[in-house]
Amino acid sequence: MRKHLFIILGIFTLGALTCGIYLAYSFDRRLSDFNNIIKLHHVENLRERLLLNIRKVEIDLYSLGSSQPESAAAVEGHVYDIKTSINTCYGCHHIPSVLERLDDLRQQIEQYDDAVKRLLSLRAGTISHRDAHLDAHIIGDSLMGKVEIMVVRTSEKLSDQTEDSLQKAHRMKLVMIGLIAAGPLIMILFALTVLRGVTKPVQVLLQATRTLKAGDMAHRITGLKDEFGELAVAFNEMAGSLQSTMRAIEESEQRYRMLFEGAADAIFILEAEGDKAGRILQANQAAAVMHGYTGEELEGMNIRDLDSPESRAAAPARMERIRRGAWTKFEMSHQRKDGTVFPVEVSAGLLVVGGRQFILAVNRDLTERKRTEEAMQKTERIRVAGELATGLAHEIKNPLAGIKVSMQALSEENSLSDEDRDVLNRVIGEINRIEFLMKGLLNFARPPKPQLASTDVNAVLDTVASLVLKERSRSREGARAIRLKRELDEDLPEIMADPMQLQQIFMNLMLNAIDAMPEGGTVTMRTVFERQANSLRIELSDTGRGIDSATMAKIFDPFFTTKAKGTGLGLSITKRLVEEHGGSITLVNNHDGGVTCSITLPVRLMEGALTA
Image (cartoon, rainbow, N blue to C red; front, side, top):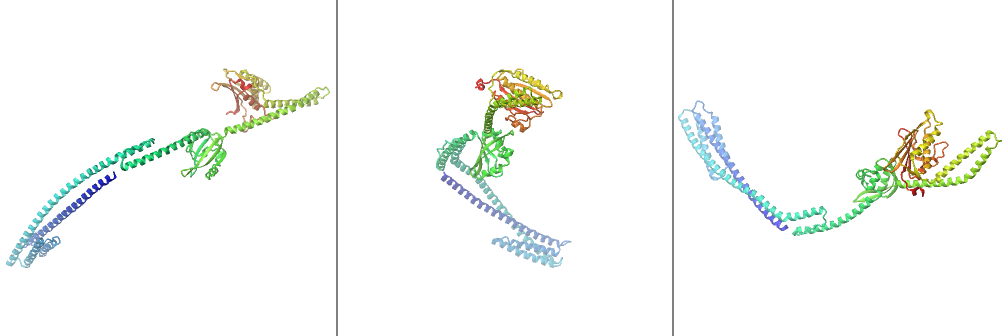
């Protein structure tokens, strides 16, 4: 194919060169012809000027016999113009025959000059003057005749040469039109030849490229020859290599995607260089779920945007340590989209791909682990406290009982004074308080198993409210009175629960609510049946002072109390009893003051879950 193209290009180039030489030669000839025509025009102009000057002199001679004759100086000036014109003609003509005629004209002009000068020197009206005037006219007429003949010949020659040049220019124009018309035809023939030999193979290659681009790596080219055949072989080898490479990349990509997207931990790929260091380039689904964002929202954010305010200050130091190449592992806290803060364990290191540096960070949510650790620590504390409480109760119970009996016996002696008996009664009261504390410790350490029975929660609440309010109303009157507000669901289903333990739970909570309102207030009892969760929600609200955040964090801790004579076990025991029933308990401050305690109990319980 290459040889054919070279031959065609050679022929085309030779033809173009020949046409170019011909056109250049033709243009040169035509320019020469037009130059000759211009020169003939110039000669014609000079000869007409010579004729015009001779006529001026003739007119001057005729004026000499009139009443207003021309001055001698003007006549001599016109004769001088004739001599100047004939001298100018010598600068244009070099042919001998022309030069011979010019010499004859110049000689006759000299004679004419002499005759005019002789005429001007004679006095007008004399015979000599008339003879000189006649001689000058004869010479001038002869001179005018010769010049007129020369002008006519020049005009005829100019006309002939102009006609011939125009015909030749017309022929050249036709030739140029033919060549111009032949050029596109030759180009079309050349293009058809090239298209015939090149377009089809190129189309095959182009279609093969599109097929590969569409993903068909098994496509191969067949049927091409010459250089295109060699190109097809190279293309097929490239396609085979590309197919193998793409298969390996796809397998690697699949493994990477399975690891990246299937990981339970959050994985981030971060920018490590420049002003955008820390920008999240890619994050897996676990990262999005962990932080409450979508994958699109995370991409483009900076990892510092996920740090909690406490952790954000140390971000530059962590980033610099990672950029130095150290694989680091540390604990910190992150912040979700909704503002909640949670602990994470971060493993991060430098990743270099294609000469660029990235940071690979793996984050693990420590919330459950921290919660489990805290629960285990709390359980351990409770266990230790239970063992301690049990041991103390057994060790103190018997001596305390003996002391109590002795004090009671002494107080019944008739010989005691009232003052001594009053001291003994106070001692017995303190012993009863110690026994109550020991009983609370035992209940907290080893709460009794619930004795399940079908229980109406509304009825238990009404019973507790009547007992507590009846007792407290005796000491609360007027503005300090306690008011009860009932918002009980009348369609509340009965549940399997221990009514005595429920009564203890509600009584502890209601007593705390009343104690929180020393100046009086309202206690609201509310029950709701949550059908979707299949559970009951019991709420007890007061209008007291509320609980500060520090106290709220420790409110259910054993032995924590804000009362002067409290044991700090009431709410702890309450929480244990609620959990023994499979429920949960929470305390929250109300927006308008006071606290709401919310208890959730399941409607149906697995009997073995609580009695085992």
